[in-house]
Image 1 (cartoon, one colour):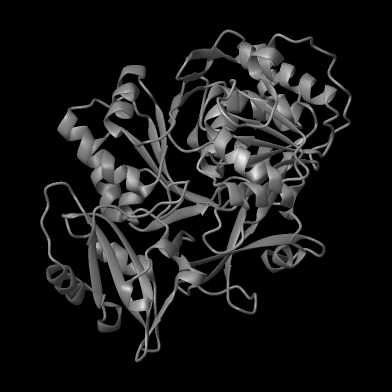
Image 2 (tube, rainbow, N blue to C red):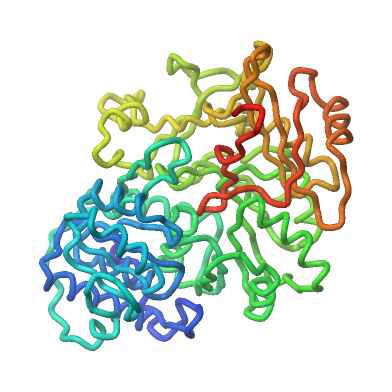
Amino acid sequence: MIAYLVHDLLTMTAQRLPDKTAVICVGGNHTFAEIDRQSDAVSSELARDGVGRGDRVAVFMENSVELVVSVFGILKAGAVAVMVNQSTKPRKLAYMMNDCGARTLIAQASVAPVIAKAAPQIPSLSDTIWTSQPQGEAPAGRTFAEILDGPSTEKPDLSLVDQDLCMILYTSGTTGTPKGVMLTHLNILSATRSIAQYLENTEKDIVCCVLPLTFSYGLYQMYCMALTGYTLVLEKSFAYPADVLRRMEELRVTGFPGVPGMYATILQVVPSANIDLRSLRYVTNAAGPISATHIREVLELLPTTRFFSMHGQTECARTCYLEGERLLKKPGSIGKAMPNTELYVVDKSGQRVGLGVVGELVVRGPNVMRGYWNMPEATAAKLREGHIPGEKVLYTGDLFRTDEDGDLYFASRMDDIIKCKGEKVSPKEVEDVLYMMDAVAEAAVVGVEDPVDGQAVKAFVVLREGAKLTDREIRQHCRVNLENYMVPRFVEIMDSLPKTGSGKICRRELVAPESV
């Protein structure tokens, strides 16, 4: 049997490894056979309610086995899973549900107050399924326990093909109105196979995921689990890092996907708590560039662990990766295209640029999204004609350059570039210099409005525990290592930096008083 559809991955692995543990989370261990059987029950329930091919069903919950079961159950019904992060507020929930026309919502009890506030503004919502019975005001619905004990029905012949829609993932909204990224079964299968290939995942791996499965980076940990048969350890968050890292030690975890801020925390917690992570075969970083300093320190802390520095977007899952010894030889690079993907850099007119020239990254491959739901103009801006007639390629909005070996280096997002004194300043270039200081744990650089220079450079810095550093010392360090126009005029030392639900630093929340 060949997996043409995403849910085939789970069914095939459940047939091959029925008794192997698929998911470890609060509440116990769950085998592939159990998850496959329970997702069949969810699929049957949705079918009885009239949910079918192409209908949208929203999933609103934190990391849990119920989330895994729900997604595969929705796909088995031929429907489209719409992922809603647990931290979503009523206004945004109503927007997403109305935008995609979802009439069914599968949710955990803890988000019932949010749903209760949003429901009057969601006329399409007609059915709610709860993972457990909510307390207080909440829309009526059935519970998972009732569904799993209910009658099973034969799987319908949906005649799905890999071009059918599989998921809608809404962007975080940090750049405006959230956009619903439409992903087909082919998009997700292609990305999953490529990711598992370069990470060399096998059924022997045990991967710990603290990232929300409702976001692309976390979601593909679940799909790689279904493809390869590895065990997925689901944590609700990284809010208590010492506890998570202790569990990783106990379970002998072999893989860990993280974001830059998590590695800053690991570098502090692991040595101080004397945690043994020698079982880690690999760690990955995405959702934002990580400094060369932190990469070097992680490799020193975990000398037998492979570090994969990656770049990706919701619109295409992943683009490129760099790992191993090449990371130390090429600090700041994130390598070449992942398998079955072509990448190139273009100027404003769409022409390919030469080596070392900064331009926009373009992605070509089966992992590129179908488009944005209900947003033809935004889709046309992002998906443009490629060099093969009729083919659409993805213009990422991210600025990169390539070296003589063809390896890529991230410069900035196009809308993050700071224009100071007529010069263009890449926030990442300034942040890399800030990370050269041993006392700096996290840094973010933004532009603030200035009547003379257009924009002034401002740096926000989080210090390592116990470290002392003044804003004057930070600016002096930058003067030694940066051109004058790139040196931050303002420096603010903070306890923490604001993050999006996917763990990215949220620059738009770093509103400086000077810009108000």
